[in-house]
Image (tube, rainbow, N blue to C red; front, side, top):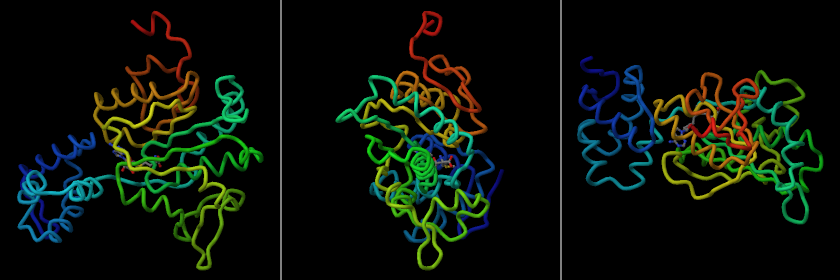
Length: 289
Ligand SMILES: C[S@@+](CC[C@H](N)C(=O)[O-])C[C@H]1O[C@@H](n2cnc3c(N)ncnc32)[C@H](O)[C@@H]1O
């Protein structure tokens, strides 16, 4: 395809291949040719800040002298973090209407006889997804504060996790939401959107690469992994969805993005709604085959 030169540095085919291989190996992200311009604009800033002559020198530096912080900056620059509050809102309606059956199961009674509910937002970006889960459930279940309820929210990108943990968003962030939904949020002195403490308190934000080993076993009653697997190739998606099945409780729900599907890996799941899957409680001989 030749050279792309819209930033300070030109990107050769060879350099693009090296960058692609590197981000695939670390994060499972498959960069298409269409991402060349984005790669140049995002990585040029880093190359310039390091005082390096170009992308080849940058990849050499990452391979031989770079620190974990340099690797993190490389990954942060190549993730796509688009998200919003109440995105694909049918998922939150589905969760709300099924929470009753999730907590009714005997094995979900937690400490002190309180209902136990565990949800994972995997690839949470700047936090709108886990905050929406918390706000929607707090509004629907007034006694939720007394439950043993936790949301784990993780992402590979350290900059989005830091922003998510702050829980403060620009004033326009709620544009397009109904007045009823907007009323779930608080406003700061300059009109900025603030997440109420009741929602912040139930969420733990952590840095986590979905391609790496996970430091927990679950079980989660619901996993949101939406608009994350679109960046992965089919084999990587297959392995990820299999692993998500392993940390989901029997009958737990997996919510995926509007353009995604489980296809061949859906053996352990059944489709129960629009991009909503439920982990089968009993594996039949046919499933296992
Ligand atoms: C488009 S956002 C989706 C955010 C949210 N789930 C939603 O649907 O609105 C995709 C997120 O996946 C994260 N991501 C990509 N590869 C990842 C990986 N290997 N491990 C963890 N997170 C990853 C990105 O950093 C990004 O924040």
